Length: 245
Image (cartoon, rainbow, N blue to C red; front, side):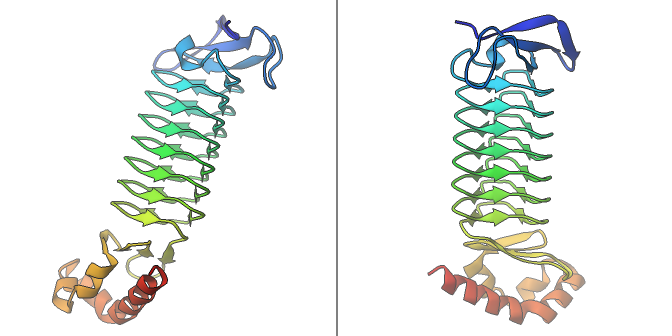
């Protein structure tokens, strides 16, 4: 049985025409006759479960909201994204591409989740955070502020990635990363990697680099940075490795 209908007289024009929805009967916390958000077509919002789109939220393209998921506020879900389970997407957040948000995960405020990303469990992505490419955020992890998680990176456990942190490559974060700002380059240590500026290597690799190898990273500026901070960073790496063994 269908739980909502498209209102042909209440539309929005984006890349395609979107239609406001109206509940045909009561379910979950939705009352019969209640107005919802906008969808492009019925395949965007399942008629099963308590899934709903409300406020000025928009779901379009081949995107789908199902289960008991809720998309609301000014949020948008589009292309081939999936939001399901008890997931919530709200505020001005956007989920698109082939991204999936599920379980009890939340994406809110001005956060963007896109690419082949998976956000699930009790994870929360908010603020101006960006999670993209093949990254995974799960368990009770959170990504916030202006933080970016990309590549094949995984953020899990109780880890919180925030501020201007940039986690990428094959980085794995199960605890809060160590972030050092105010130097010529930002320094971020995760479970197995250290990133200095744009250079990211395994912690064990950093320990093997001599001054000549470090100087190749960014010419004169890199050489000056390493002359000042290499000793401190090596000690930090050794301490970090010890903490994870």
